[in-house]
Length: 111
Length: 114
Image (cartoon, rainbow over all chains, first blue to last red; front, side, top):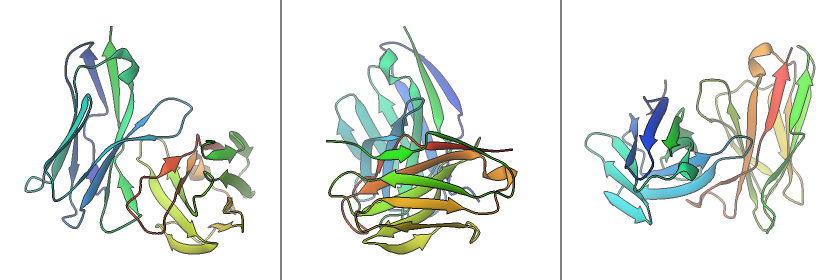
């Protein structure tokens, strides 16, 4: 049972345009969400997080939106840059330490 | 500041053997987490250690075990290896017990079971 789903395995976007990565979850107890970025041969690195008490969090070019009623979160990258090409994982937790990760979306930003 | 390190980077074993994977957390971090990333799947939570104790484990059989040493480094042991154990094993550390702090990941150990 995949509690956190990233239904798009890959996404290609032109440099300078917006990248939108989506994530759906099923467990209504999840109250903290994160996005991680992973380059080949490296471990995932933290990108941005959002608590369920908020519906938006921004950090530079990265914005995460949370729609609790739809159990959906998305990551917007504006403007997209070639260096953003990586695999993006969303993760969710219900309480503390234990994160449930999605299967990842491979983003390719075309120059 | 040195990040999370893992060794070896690659490991090849045959079915039925045992594998030992090692992880050194970021200095000052007391919690270590292990994840398995099999092909086509997300990161699956395996184990959480803090202050030398196993705090929780994911839905994996008992042949997946580990320990945390007094210096907070950790070992993951996989006994009686099966072909489906082939995966990337990621270790992460965080500075507090059970907090919402993000987990900092190492580069992983790629295990191949033949």
